[in-house]
Structure formats: C-alpha cells, structure tokens
Image 1 (spheres, rainbow, N blue to C red):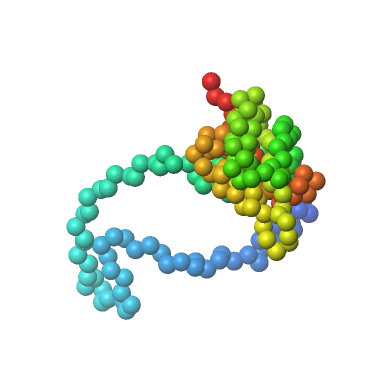
Image 2: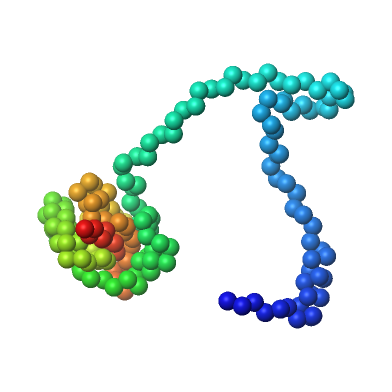
Length: 186
C-alpha cells in the first residue's frame, strides 16, 4: 500500500496540534534496582546505604502447562482467530445442523445432544444450532438452558466442542446456542 504525502495545509494543522501536546505524567513509580532501598529523604552525598541483597532463591522450573482444556463459557473462543470468532458470535457462519431439545428429559437430552454432536463432527460439520428453549416462565430459567452449557464442558463433549454462544434472535436468541465443533484431524 503506498502512502501519500501530506498537503501543506495538513502539515500546518499537525504543527498547530502538536504545539499543544505535553507528555503525560507517569502514574506508576519507576522500578528500583534490586538491592537498593528507596528512602524518603535524600541521603547526604557520598553516604548512600545499600540494602543487603537477599540470598538468591533457587530457580523454580516453570509449571508445566495444564492438560486440562479451558472452561467454555458463552462467547469465549480459544483456538479460532478473531475474525471467525466474531462471525461465529454474530451468527454469520453457516448453520450446518440443528437439534431441538424441547420436551426431553435431562438424560434423554444429554444423550441425544452427545450423539448429535458426534455425528455432526464425523460428517465434517463445523457450526450447529442447539435449541434448548427459554423455560416455562419468565421468572425461571429453563432446566436445559442451564444444563447444556455445563454439559458442553464435560469430557465427552470437550473433545467435540471448540466454542459456544447464545444464538441471534432470528435463530432463537437465548433459547438456543451456536456450537462450533472441532475439525476432524487426520
């Protein structure tokens, strides 16, 4: 991409703006070198006291990275780039499958959801819609609406699911979830 040269009017405007600019005050104290104690009153010249250096602590090896995957929550998208995460959250990815869990018991919904996600992933599908419903009354949140995000964090589901988020209103709003499945690696 080529850059154009600023016009004389733009340069003059920039100089005018830059004249009024002052450096910001530093809001945090400057770091002190290790082994020197900061004093409230300046010491007389030639008599600066040095603090005793603490004995060096044995270097601890860095903690090994956890093999446990991160906890999935609505809108959290690890493992995908920002652009795709934004398209996912806004419902702009093609929905390649849908399951409606209305009217099922928790156990039946759990089992059906797991088998649906396995089939979808095995067929190379990437984004699916899971309809949980909003619940019976406005004062209570539906059982499945609460349970599905918890299930998606279970070990059986984690090998399938990359991210999830509430659906856009045209797809069911808070009564449905977009689920982004992991790719099948060969």
